[in-house]
View 1 (cartoon, rainbow, N blue to C red):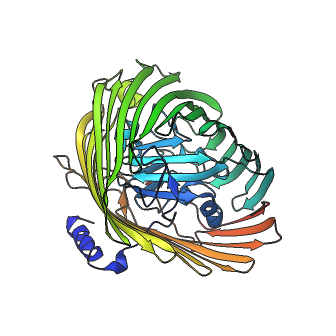
View 2: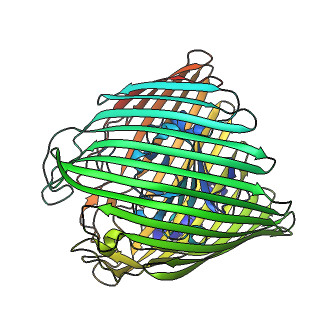
View 3: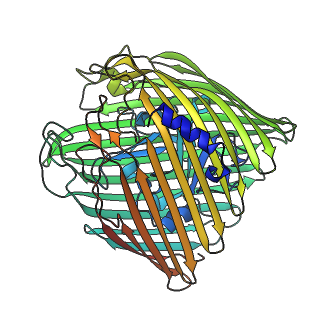
Length: 606
């Protein structure tokens, strides 16, 4: 897709209400916190945001984060050969390290690669996911060029409630989960454990001089064992304490020349305390640590270790300046550390960020202003900002306009990896403008957003340098509706992620970004039965900057059925890739064919 086709699509959308559709993951009353760091409803938010709830995860019978995120508006995923293999995510065509990932408010991800390991996070232990598209560096600092994804673990509360599940499926896949939740009226807790394993399939095709650069025609399996602990207590009216821990350990097999096995640990631990000082002032203190650890092997022989830790602390103060005005002032502190058998010249950096945000309503006009300054021990100071305005055109039609800047600090690999890094790199920067329309439908909601994001000082080459530029324009359409026993949702993304650098690759499509993606979810209840399906389609993508390695577009159909055996018991079956389509998201890496998975669940009170 080029600018002409995109312009035609935009013209069609804004002249025909038939194309004005909405987010399938939420209704307008859903409370979100990621877009503003304060609790707001989706309808009141001036950002482009999606929410995946626990009921969405169970309805889809999803097995991984990729299952629930793939196909959401603005989301493109790349996978290197199945369960547990490297999975990267792009928001609005930005690079995979331009996405900030939080778990219960704690920043996670590898400080060496700059990305989070989506393949290792246990889906069963997740309560909700918020996806914010667009620049949010003015609230969170580095990395939030494409957006922010925040994962919330299961919280608990109420009466003591156990739950459990067991699953089996194709490729000798097995899994089991168990959890216990409760806490009464003043407190909450949830303890959960999940285990999954699969024999997998041959991850890499073994093509000469591309992908894994080797030919190892064997099945590449994966194991993951994870647990979460979360608890809190309302110590007084307006005062709450919350503690949380997530740990996931993985064993992964893949294809490679120097290593083909890995043992990984993802761990997030944090604590938060909020207190309402008076009717005007609410203060929050939080601290946490994210760990990304990996030991790598070649045919069982030790090869390398890459361990990174990200320590976070935050002090946030919200001041109510009347019923329609909120001022937020905050201070963030972050320290990244690297431990490896690879000799990095620098293994630690510290960042301090201060931010201010105003949210207000004047008559029918809604406004959000944010400004942040970050001081990094490696590259110095950087300032980002955001301004958004919203106005109701009619009772069921809202318009919003937003502009924001963002930046991404270079990773330790880009700066200091031996015989590769460049210590003189500058942060990557971006400027984004977007226009959105949205409103309610009977039993649902719709939204349409156009955006233009221009990224400068992109890091590329060998050794890496700030040489590239990108211009990414796009259209996002989403809609969901419930009528009677039917639930339907549509997500459509059209984008033009263009290399804007001078030279031979100017005007080429950025690597591994699909320019078109469509997802349709349809479900219906029949008494004790629930039947549904998901259609996901993506256009072609290219694996390299000069667009010579093309990957064809594809369409996948997943079918599902769920039967309520008794009040607390249900049996679910999922048919993945029903047409057994062969496709790629990364050149030279296989993707799963047709598969059947069956799950027995015990969930009292559901």
